[in-house]
Amino acid sequence: MRIIENIQKLAGILSLSSFDGHIAIIAGSGLLTLKTAPVFAFSAIAGPAAILLAATMQGAMKERILAAIAAGLLATVIVMLAAAMGSAMSSFLSFRILRIFGGVALVAIALMMFGLNMSEKIPLIIMLAGFIAAALWSHL
Image 1 (cartoon, rainbow, N blue to C red):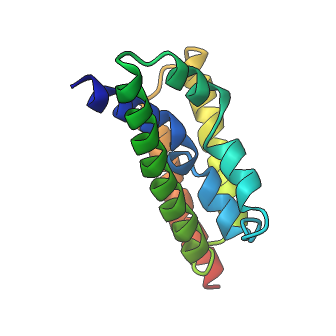
Image 2: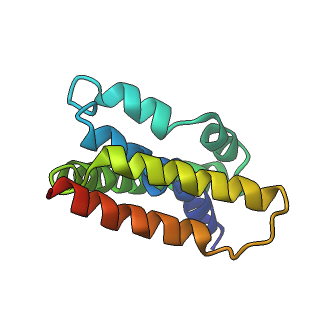
Image 3: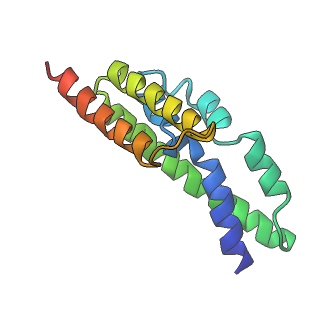
């Protein structure tokens, strides 16, 4: 069962850029092309934390290699889906508006980290409002 745990940990770290929106924004803005894909792949997928985690995984060498290959394949698929979603979103969302709401959500998260007492759902609500505003703004 250790191999499944290793795959889950490593795939989660490897595909973080898909979940935080970096890949979708890069793809939606037109920067992610076939020529620039390797640059973004190495910077977005194979970060220092993922390499460190892969080096310190538990288990036999064969299990660690299998977990690294499986996690790499899984993370690649997740990043490709995020890039496709970003390209599709660029046709019906205004990324300029979405960036503003994303910044406001980050400020809310920072204020919560500094101890401001507010609901933990506020950043999510801000981002949902941002998606709605970006969709409405792009159709005006």
